[in-house]
Image 1 (spheres, rainbow, N blue to C red):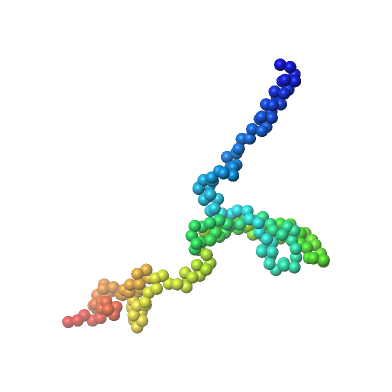
Image 2: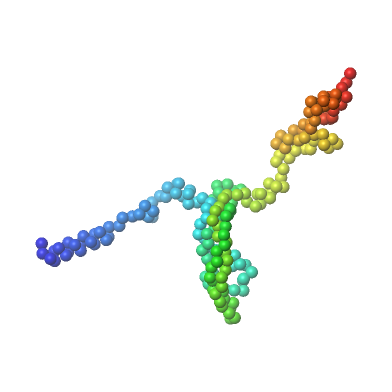
Length: 189
């Protein structure tokens, strides 16, 4: 084998190695199916990078133009699998970024702006659901006899009214408990 043949063989071998693409585990073709657990885990409520408009964070700055107009922030996002819940931060911190602020036809300067980033998230009741639950009694009970309310105790879970005093309490006073009125009465003879 002469030098030219050897060089050609080496070139063809290297070309074949270069063009042989070994796909990574995370690379997928357009017809691949993503497994359920991967889809589910990616959709969970968790901190993730999101693009956030600066004016959304600083609505009072509408007379300015910002460059960039949006920033990448780590914020809580994802599904909670219950329409009464929403993905909310449980831990956050501030981050400062240098942004160009322009007041059209007047001035421009680089400023430091502070943004909140989320470091931990949790599915919690939506504000409107929480407020609604506070205004609704569960279960709603009719009150025990209004006239002698102080003599009754009501179980909020069952709405059952029972006497504050026990039979023993009344007997210690040589009286007996009237369960209808919840009073300690003199014994009948």
